[in-house]
Length: 276
Image (cartoon, rainbow, N blue to C red):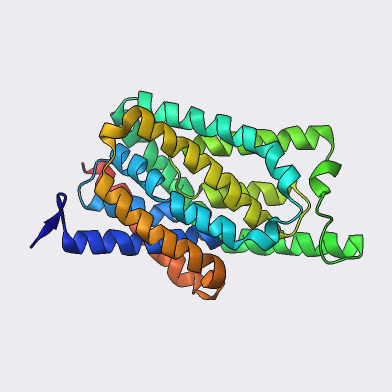
């Protein structure tokens, strides 16, 4: 069958579809890498190359999903500007680790990270219900539907520093291996910030965009020769489409089906890495 820059046409089509799924899931849940990363590994792309190519390719989807949540971002820009430096430093640290640690170290660590990410994906519904109920209780106590937009400014110094540490550590994880960083981040932010879950999801999308953009830029500058640009283009096209529609209609998708696909592909990725 005719190939495109070393890939068969059916492989190209499947990677674009994986990118669409990843872009949509990232906008709503935050574990799209668990679709695109296993797809690349399954087609024989080395794990480190898959991670780098995936990070670059998902940027358009991150941008689209952040724009899609612009209503939830109103009133949060002061908070975002306060958290961005932690995301920048964390993502640079994670990217440095990926580029400088031996590849066999990555292949040892990533299956563990994948298992953690899959557990987060499976447990996300229960966690979302907990966070939603927590937000409702806070809203009722405050006597209004939404917590004030400037709630981030009302945090104690100790709580604010704790949030910065969480954002920094999550960004290290995202810069090294991006799978499910969105789920991890929104879970921790939901526990620490007294705000509506949808507003936190918008905040999560922006911070993940920062992490992925910084790490992807680092990969391009330092390790451009280790990036599979065919995969990047396929994922970029797919993630742009998926990110746009995911932010608009993603909540109508079946969560059970999405999580089932993510878990299956995650297990396939673990198997592929362990048997390389």
